[in-house]
Image (cartoon, rainbow, N blue to C red; front, side, top):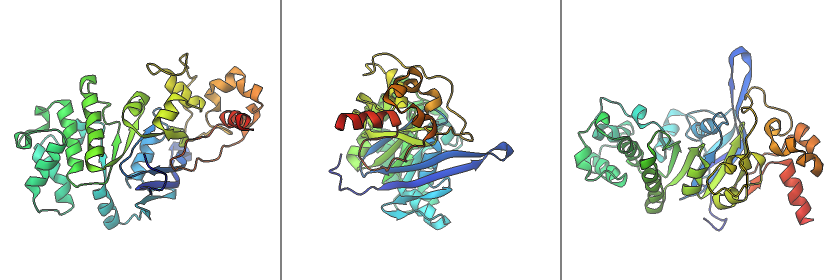
Length: 334
């Protein structure tokens, strides 16, 4: 971690992404997000399916255009011209969760890894750059894999090819969307260890999108927990996952092995539709603290149901968007 003076390499500022759903309804997929990724840092973006984390990741990559707000790389807001996006994507690379779908079955490993170089018009030392990328991704000796096809490889090897395809451009940031979700448990640890080694050896920064807080605990420096389009808690992994403050984070943490939460929390219902965001705290219809009467005892139950919460400001500090947690914290410090 840094001393707080390091400037982010990638940032989202007041980011919102809205889509028109059937019937003309507006889906607030990302609904006010501030997020900073520091150089050489692994940031986990966590939450249930449908919380907006994949849309946020795609927007950070420039694959979705924000409805409002900005994405900035090295302090410069991203422009959406073809030329600018092409240059940006050579520095910020995507690693998909399904290596089988990400690889063309008709292309050899060599061609799959070299594709990025060819798209960006980089034709010097192609052979050496492909070999270096495969080697860094753990496929050694790399020449052994050049003429292989995806169907001839294991799932873990295919994921390493996908990672090599990102590394070949020497990016500064990787955005990995559920990078081990489709892999057998036996190889997940190997891929996670590879991502951490790349961070240590190359100084790569990474955003890892995951629904698995156990994965986040093992790999990330910081975590941002999303719910219904917003980050509801963020901070260092050790702090957030050992002492979660938001009821949603507490519920997610409660089912982990060796959880600091004494009893598992079963959340009622499914996440609300992004076209119908509840008033007040967007988590309140499912909140175990509100349902138990603890929020009423603290005197904030009315706020939970009616008062929207401030958008978290980003940065490195631990933050939580919760009326109950904020009230309790103020009571302790007063």
